[in-house]
Length: 164
Image (cartoon, rainbow, N blue to C red):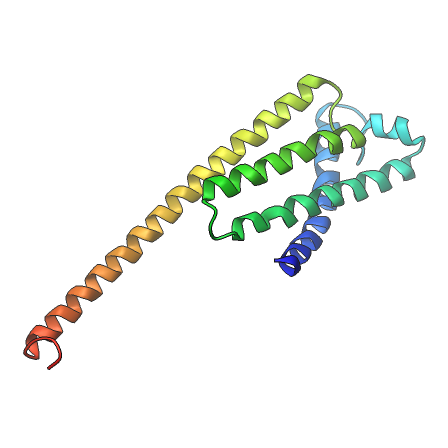
């Protein structure tokens, strides 16, 4: 599980760097301000654009690494999909607050609460979609198994019974 975590975390780091910068750029553009790859709060905290860009990129990478790396909870076979999803959701949402405060992803408590609620709703939607996908796959497997059992039984009956 350790190597799997490291591979996923590495990919997550790269994705986190890109996604955090794209989202920050998009939302600063949407707000009608100067298009920045970092928040104005982060710029004020670091005192310069280079420092803000480096911290935003590295912080987003760490957030992505932990978010992707902790998907290993889905590989724990004795855990249900609900338990894995809930655990991962708590990790991601719990990490969002300190990361968001550090990187200036929100300015008010309302910003953080809204984002956390949206993340929770997305987890619920993803869980439901995955539940129905897995349910359909299990149904197909059961149908295939039942049809193959019927084929074996009919073959054995034609040959004069079992063991003939």
